[in-house]
Image (cartoon, rainbow, N blue to C red; front, side, top):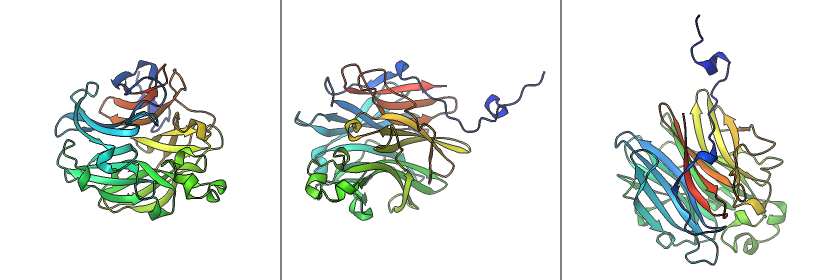
Length: 331
């Protein structure tokens, strides 16, 4: 008896990404200390067939007042199997003259040059910004050589951070978490918005996902909102952190929280797009994936698509409230 080719296609299931089970995840890096506020994650992962290596960027964070605090160190590590990693590069927040670093996007360009698009708090105005560094390998980035990609002031916002960069054809698409002021925030003044160097954690902004595009990966043009905030569990924040492309659909994983109290403990939702310019949320009633521990935080998902499997890397709450960087492999 003949069977249809491609079981999912025969059922008319088009471009549906498989999900992962966080309870089976393997720890890649442990938090820098026990308890809430100690995190390692905000990762960006990629596989390079030229070197037959996996590379992953991640940052370490400690609670405010525990020195060195906030996002104090970022690293890049390499691996032959995508599970066991060895550090090959690191930088401290002092090298960026900043109070905190966050997510970056590690990208190999079409000409073989590596770029690291990194977000950090701008010392000039205490708003999050995005810069880029270039190198011949992931071990060669020099913070002193960084150049501006986009600042909050460039686009009239209160913060731009957590870039996620992909190349389609020869065009670069950057998804960005951006902070737009609320009516209450508009009358609060700069001191309340940026006095803590993190407007996202004030309750005076809402966090959306925006899109910027570029022909050269250096000069980006702002395109506007790609994913709006929701009305329920993701009403305060909707931050796309990665995309799995299974034609004809871009399956997006995004971080959400209903209020500012969950700003650092987001859960993961799902959205879909056919062009990266506009996403439809498909988990409006609640997150799709959560940690079984503590706050349930599971955030900053990134995915590396291989021929027969997807490696999902993410930051996840553990029983004591700290966040570890972990990986889950799905066939």
